[in-house]
Length: 405
Image 1 (tube, rainbow, N blue to C red):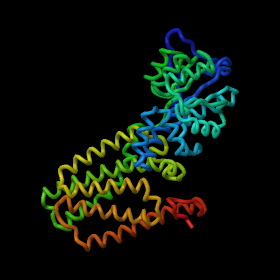
Image 2 (cartoon, helix red, strand yellow; image 1 turned 90 degrees about the horizontal axis):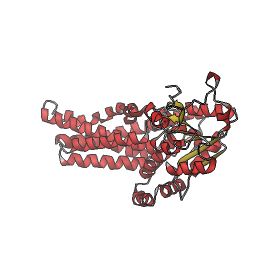
Image 3 (cartoon, helix red, strand yellow; image 1 turned 120 degrees about the vertical axis):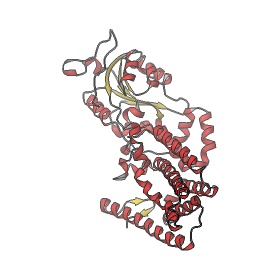
Image 4 (cartoon, rainbow, N blue to C red; image 1 turned 90 degrees about the vertical axis):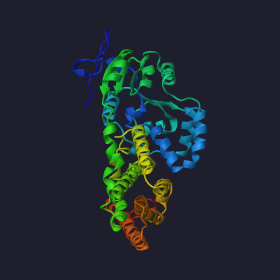
């Protein structure tokens, strides 16, 4: 929705002049802007932490130790091991247009964020709109009360306007001259009980409605391979076998969709530079990372529920599929030739899982034929991706350690 003027609380006055323009006094007052889910359509920590663990799952115990020492320590350790490209991040276009208009009018703007100072400084330098930035460092997590105290110390009580998006920002709005709410009307009402609400801006994004695209439901057709053993064994007329095959099919579909989420989190930086993949829900900021993780977790629970009703051998193949796809997302996809061998193996594993689900043996001839067929398809897929990049970029771009030339 477009920006709208929120209703001020009783007794409050709008800082507006004629035609809705900010009063001169407001332009003289510093404007402080939050980063995560305000200027950006995403949260850097929510992206970085799961992506880091997908890439380095063995670092989980160490990561929990950092978290036990406090969020500031966790963010500092992650920042030392992670890089971002400010030019590819998903910005809230409406917030960015508004900030550019304020900057063009001569207003002093500051960026204040609970994200690590390394990333906040890089984004501020890239945009060129900010007088300065205040952010989390190794000793202080700049969120809620800590952010309020830092801003009051710098600007004084009521000496700044603040744009934020969450309940944690209510503490800051308590000492702000005016609130700019990047969120819904319910948050604006709560902010209005503390200070004057100058405007409400749409946070952007599709929320839960973007989940089906993140799950890539259209890719479920690949799992039709689980029905091949049912057909080759001529069991399509037996209700019990058909029921088992259907359970196996949905177990793999739910598992694959969950893995797509983790894969996209691990690949966010690469996807955002890709001409097509940058429009995916997570890369574009359309789908919040917490929503995606909750959805993926529920899908894994459903997959396990389906598997418990099938033979133990099927559960073994499903577990092998999950482990292999996770390993593929973390490491193998960046190993040329190994990645296509892994893809071919995952397709063949579907045949073996389908056979285990209906209690038949997959023939050697079927497996041999399938492995060669799937390897050929995987190679064609890589070639087509590289060919498209060569046409778009002139042939010099890298993709998963393959070169277009």
